[in-house]
Length: 112
Length: 118
Image (cartoon, rainbow over the protein chains, first blue to last red):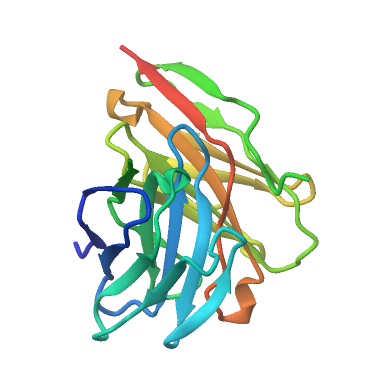
């Protein structure tokens, strides 16, 4: 069964450094999302992407964040200058339609 | 106001018994979808079941069923014949404006930690 994959599984970085989180969607999926979950808290929406552009973004998704689909397959989330409070599990989700969102296994980001 | 409310932070159920996890939601949008996800201790988010606001019948997927009471804005997850592997955090989520065709966000509840006892 096809799955959403994410790399790396765990990223440790110094505050102020740039990180890029990568997601490989299920091949025929058209809708892409990033969410994050701070330890012990609920899952929070960051951004959604459809037809090569951002559909929707939350207040969390400020100028430090960006997304792109550089080669038509990978879907990336970049954090330009990480802060301590960016430490969280970051989930990519993809869907063939608006009815479903399948989540990847997540990338645990630790900012020191 | 919370869009998704899960009032049971923790639930216990005996193996092989059925359990109902509650979820209420708040929206004025006539077109929405409700989702349930399972998050085991390993951290991944596993899609379980989906119910659209216009669906006439309650959704079912194997041992999972969704008790959708539209007038009460309630979408409870029923797990029949609980197994030890069902022990996990369960999240209810809602997507509004499903008819728009755009990539709209899911709004999640705070989750219910289910523990299945042997």
